Length: 236
Ligand code: HEM
Image 1 (cartoon, protein in one colour):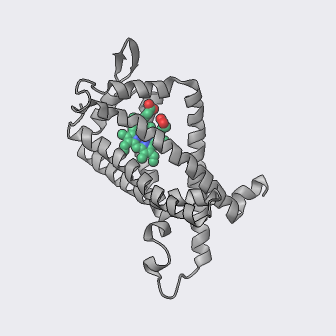
Image 2: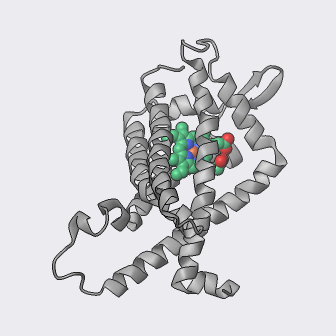
Image 3: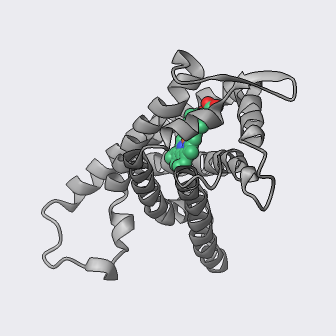
């Protein structure tokens, strides 16, 4: 396959979707892991942490050159995934033409695997709101962002920004809807990405299906717990 065919042929497009999908799956593990440091403030761990562990982790991510370079790759991955996703959705709709005479319902495929374009669009809307909340202030405007000294190091108080952001109920609800869409997107996307990477053995496929469900549940529960825990002041 030539480089151009990666972006024009349907096999190439699926390959790009799979590879960028695998990359984004890895990103979500790191992102959920770093953010989960906010739970260090739960009384069962250290009620006096006050977001310090998360602030230190976020500071490390934001001030390490290699990670900042990888951030460029991350955005390129997101953009490629989104563009190719829309191209594939359009192509599938055209190929299907007038649709089946009798809708197959869930007997042909699951509703969420047929709705990847719609779910992806909801995630994109969430992402725009989300980047405006955190990434734009952290990297550019510093709006609403205070400085804090933790263990002698001055850093952005990202935890403080989270507390202000998730003090509004509509924001918490918007995040829960975003994470709900992500959950169903991953329920199909996880398996699909690994299949595109060439795994076809039956035993592995079964294992993959189970891993996909566990991955989607754990990652999305963690993300959903963050706005809720802050809104309800379980961590503060
Ligand atoms: C729902 C709980 C979530 C919380 C509390 C949260 C929090 C944050 C914070 C604080 C940042 C800024 C990090 C920094 O620049 O120092 C950030 C960045 C980012 N988040 Fe999230 N996030 C959540 C979910 C998600 C989800 C589900 C996605 C993807 C679908 C996502 C994608 C991103 C991206 C692409 C960035 C910018 C790149 C980066 O700084 O790593 N986030 N998030």
